[in-house]
Image 1 (tube, rainbow, N blue to C red):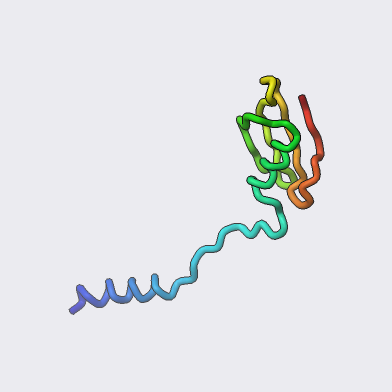
Image 2: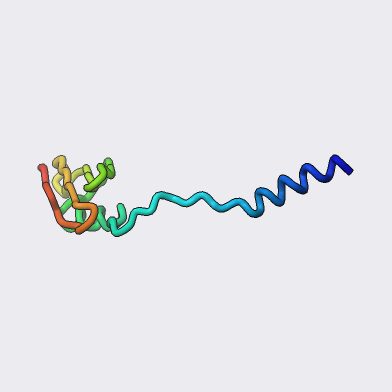
Length: 84
């Protein structure tokens, strides 16, 4: 009987445990939205996308193969900087 009690208690405890919640991004724009903003500016090939707390930094190449970096505000979606 003891063999069955401990597994049953473990299952019950796991069943009532609350689920872990992911970080709530609040009103921040998604990575897909930041990529869409960057591609609207001429970015064709994306090589790196990084979230830096208050902005998305999207790096890649334009249609002519030149390096391009676009910084997008994470809250408003405004373009902060474009480096070519």
